[in-house]
Length: 148
Image (cartoon, rainbow, N blue to C red; front, side):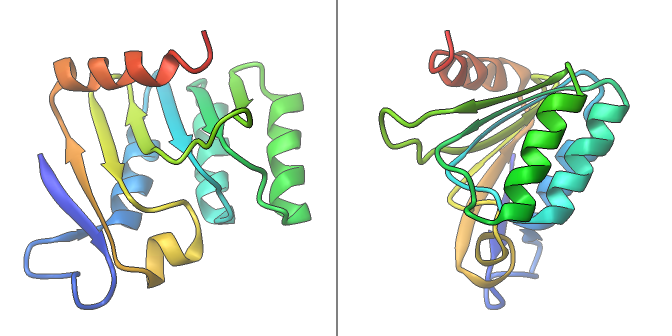
């Protein structure tokens, strides 16, 4: 387990950036990416998700709301229509605020940052990366309850 952070006074001194952890988790996925997020607006992360889809990785994103950005929203719709291994799930009956990203049920990032410019670059956000398959599997079971 290690700590990740966003915010200029929290980075360094052995603390990795949340953004670098997000990129690494998506890029290293071989079988599955599962994400629970309030909102996503960072196009670079969507590009990495698309590359994972191209590699044959199954990607499920539980999302509370669309970004309101026509470009981002149309990218999500495009991925949904082009890739059978992409599953976007809108959770709108209740507030979905959990920020969890996991890869291959081996590694998970749990934290406060949305996948937005503020969440990955500007705000003060904290998270932990868990590299314990048993704990990650428990997280996965919790998240998947929302779509069962």
